[in-house]
Amino acid sequence: MTNQNVLGKDRLIWMYIQMTRIREFEERVKRTFLKHPGVMRGHTHLADGAEASTVGALATRNATDFAMPSYRCHAQPLVLARHPKNDG
Image 1 (spheres, helix red, strand yellow):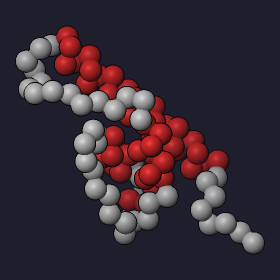
Image 2 (cartoon, one colour):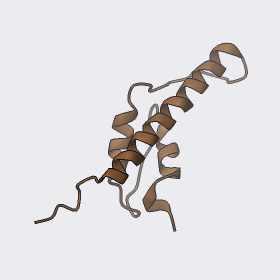
Image 3 (cartoon, helix red, strand yellow):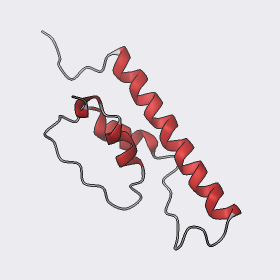
Image 4 (cartoon, helix red, strand yellow):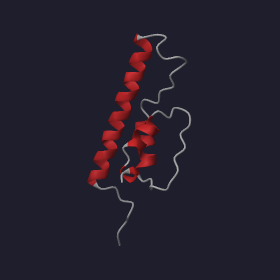
């Protein structure tokens, strides 16, 4: 009996890379917002520390599945842009 939803080594590495990309992006947003007041208008609603929930929710996404970003959703477009199911 095989389980098609088991995450293999390649997918786990992909997930880790996505989580680090999200963290780096949010850290850059935070630095820009603090060091250059007025460059970014409004507020930043960062989700640092919640990288795993975003990546985990999208890791088993099929190419035909919808993803609906909501509050604190900077990470979803980052992950979806590099999602294996979006290639080709």
